[in-house]
Image 1 (cartoon, helix red, strand yellow):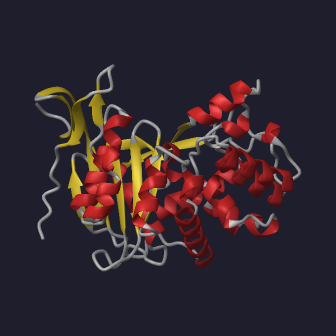
Image 2 (tube, rainbow, N blue to C red):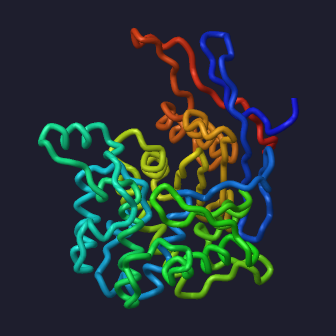
Length: 350
């Protein structure tokens, strides 16, 4: 069969019940491709993966300083959060300093991702609102930029709005994209972009090392590079604000690796990791993964396996992430009857 390679198999005993295909690419800031599998040129929707990049103008515009945004708050601006009280209170606190409330958010409302948070609302007869939307932090950052710059608030999610144009500008440069980018509407009503998977990896390599440029392309200003360093420090210092208290790969991956990387998931199973400069990758590394059919159950084992094969995570860190790396398949009596496991080889040799 042609097409993309199989990355993950779902097994029940010795029976393979499902296969998930996809693409993987890992790139250094100078453009050197360290690993690739599948089609790194495939066009994917960025979705929530680029939230750390969407946060850059919050800082460079002066809004973060103007409204005394803390690192913990910056982490939730970059988040796809669970809608727990710590998230909603933090977003509400940002909005309060802007002179706004949750009614200004144009992300829409959905129940908290956290089952515990959703149950608590039901117990107290409270209806979920826009603060519980996993993107409410990102939107509070966009609103902060708009308020600081004296821009309209009613249409801040429009691709033509100055807030979004500033995001598009920095994203184009950090991802080394051309002048024309496909734009669609995300689940939270903000723009999402259709770009090659490799461009996402390039962007995250620059999150890992914002001072590096590829042959004078993709250059960031000094202020933007400083903003990136703050964003990375905030996400690694407060990983629970980026995801949640339990069951979130972004949070647990950043906790397990203790500041070695930044992890960000996006809808329809796109994921990116910025590996900070270290002995193995002294210039840093950007990694991007896309599961073709959008299956989240295949994404998490793939991400952990990629980082293992790249030797970004060690055996102890891999063991701490085993529930993501090799999740069990259970029956209705809660017996483990199989597993979801990665089956690819990046072809890397010591």
